[in-house]
Length: 140
Image (tube, rainbow, N blue to C red; front, side):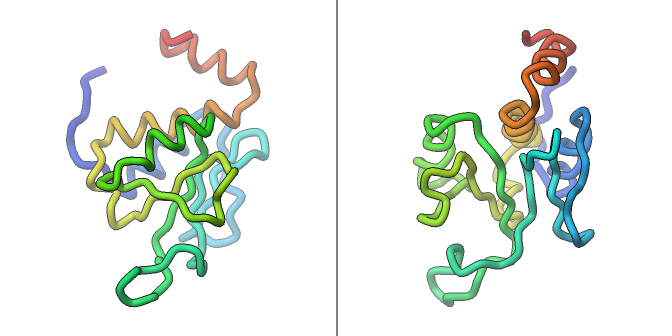
């Protein structure tokens, strides 16, 4: 499959998440999906919360997506670079996830975003489902 270096979009988040096997949307609102595999969330669009605010205005970010990661090391790899669009807040200390504002998703390529979402799915899927997907994609 050819690599895609085009900027990622919010539509890509939805397309990649729903393109993974056995995915359901457990969200209560169409504009705030909660993508799950086996009743475990791996990507969700959250409501504005007091832990993620604009440092200049104090306004709550209304465009935050939570994406699971497999390990604390994976989380640190995504958030330690100040220029990365991924971030975390003290509220998520100890939680295996990163945050991404949809307003910054275009700083990633479509392939970079897809890899993070696929890894999120793999971190939450059952071992059997994860192994089947990896084998199907020649990665197992």
